[in-house]
Image (tube, rainbow, N blue to C red; front, side, top):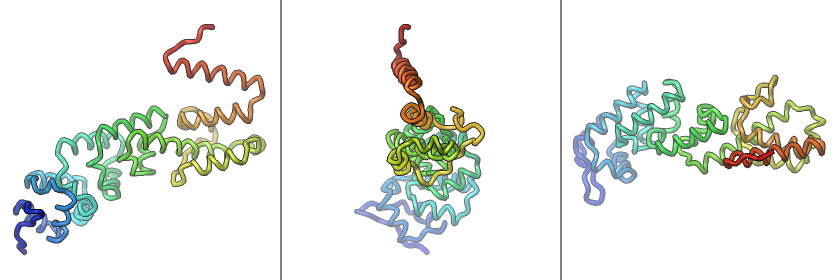
Length: 251
């Protein structure tokens, strides 16, 4: 059925684009709604639109899935080829093809996020000894996070890791930690995350994030160590702090 060009504020959507999308399965009314959300549709070329549809089809997505993805995120119709390629290259280094397919169905924004910010987020996770794949699978919103957002997320994950580790620590040691501290850890921790801790080697630095290790070091220093050990802890801590800033302590 032909509805004519869709217009908004005097602007017209290209008739060929309208007919292609209408034939693909979109209703005229929702195409008008897309215009209100994504004004780039007024200036898009048919090739850009068909390339983006073909990109989604190449992911193994059905027509119904593609329509639902675009209904949730009309910007997917006009994203540039270069941006898709660069993001796709990044994703393929983290996820399997099947995982990418599943993620885009659940999180259609994955190909319109900021490439630079996402790279910063992934690099930050790796520096904190966290697996980017696991963090993102646990919370797909991480794909849209900036550096400040991911720092908050990593802190929550660290609290969750520490709480999980304390499940495997002798109860007499856990009892030395003030209830208020444990309650704060519980309140500040990430709730909807599966923490994988090796029960046979719970304090292995390769097993948990750097932030969780720092929290455990704090617990050890404040509640488990004797006076002499505390002194050594503080000396080591100060040494590490100075060295991180580029200084060296003279013995």
